[in-house]
Image (cartoon, rainbow, N blue to C red; front, side, top):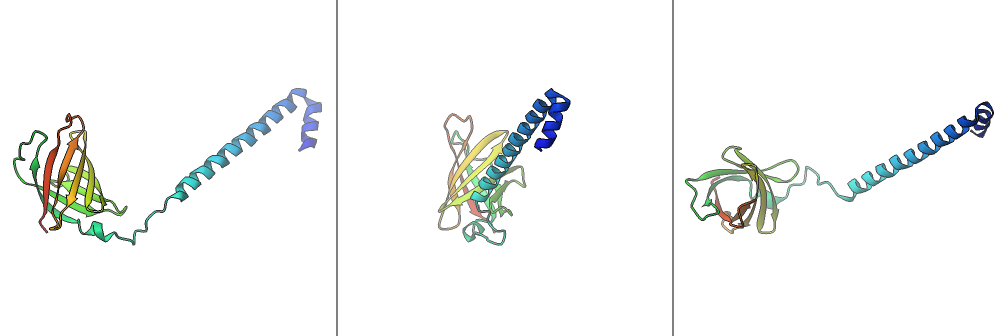
Length: 159
């Protein structure tokens, strides 16, 4: 390599400067790429991805169809009974689908509670449901921009 640089220096003095700058840029660029790849691998390997063959039995107990009754944030009862389907998706999360997919959300079971997130008319909603001994769920939901009021729901398993 030094022979090439010496030859370039005798041919054109500015070429040695240019060659040195290119070598430095390549070294720094290579270091940056290697460092970012190492960091990405380190972050990815820090978390264990659950095997698709492993199924959490506590989540399987929630899978099914439910009749939903409740109240809106002002305390008025719903006009009728809605249908909620809960299924287990390949990622291991619970998918919730109200009224044949008009509203879809994702849930995570934690001990005797189910935390659910979904959108209604473009507004984020969070529900925290208590899992009752009889298999029903009851709890409150809060919609973004509802000024702190909470709605309530009861989910009773149909099948």
